[in-house]
Figure 1: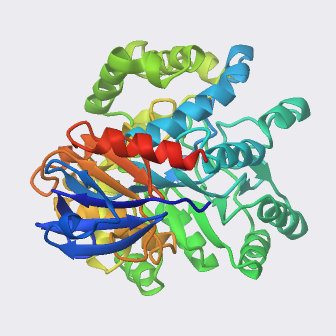
Figure 2: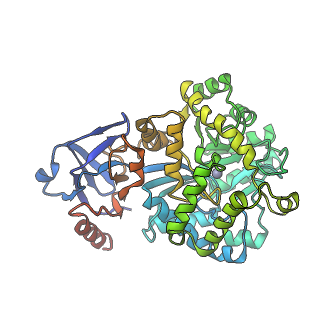
Figure 3: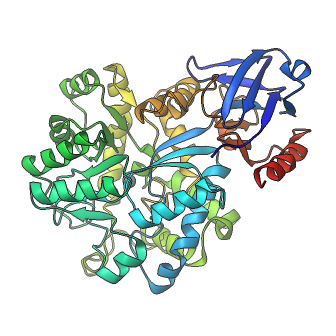
Length: 474
Ligand SMILES: [Zn+2]
């Protein structure tokens, strides 16, 4: 959507996401939805045609990118009647939470196609604030396969939700048909599951797509120019999916990525989104963070029913005796947190192994994938854990912006602040290269040249945003 605006952002430090450094004394000119120029000095004084926006010394960086969310999936376990009617409102809150946290692009790695379509059109027509969404629509998996914690919804619930979370396919023909259907409904990526062993208590071995069926998904996706992302959990999953030629791996083996696999992975230009915060789900630190966020602002980020469900989820894993008796987890799926916790140190070390071999790492949060994976909260948690894996703040921020843009094949449009790129930019308080915590202090968010969140310190911001709103509504 084209619109008129000419802005010059000044009095800022600029994060150069290609070289991982801060540039001082720069001004950024925005025209319409694009970045027009990045200039040295105070371009504001020379650019009469551009309305000045004083950023008050904040650090300006490209909008954050999250390569793994489930924006339409607020309730993985319990589709109660109350949850059912809160779905639409919660989805809007998820979108808003991304913007509040400075996340301007997400790849949705599995959700309800109908809900995704309506969310995307509401965001595109500026009815609600939300990120740019790259969509996979429903995931493709084997009958009885992972995600074994997500039910197959009966027809009327499916119609209400706008599809299934995961479509089960048992033959190459079915695989080609479902993959084609996802593409027809707007999927830009295809998501497949490939997990041979369950994460659930009492889950055991799981079926995965056989080679012919997996190949049919790949061929159909490739035939329409789509890339494929693949959920994995162990080295055997990664090796199998790698032999099929997928583009990105979601999550990260809970055992060690063997050297030969890391080398092949790197040589083939594949990328992995390690979702460390999601795999650290058993840690006390993470539980405390989630609980304190719920205490502080639970009702503002979650509808009443999801809030109740998230609290109950925390009780199940944190307060009640764990593991629960067999009779309880037979009735309701329950994650084997001890299994995941034992694998976490390997998952952390795998990040170093992949980077050492020259492979690509992405930043994905799995927000919405677990009840505790709150939108806008897990991003900072993921960054923290990448630091634990040995990355510097500059490396982490490059992955969050230019690195993720390249994994999504969008580095010609987003992820850097350069002339011609889409004006997705955020301003944060402090120096994120000294303290990554600065990335949580988001004071301004611009997406496609529009302010979606203000900058209280910036002198002209309120006037400019009012002026913009006036112009946009014409
Ligand atoms: Zn996920």
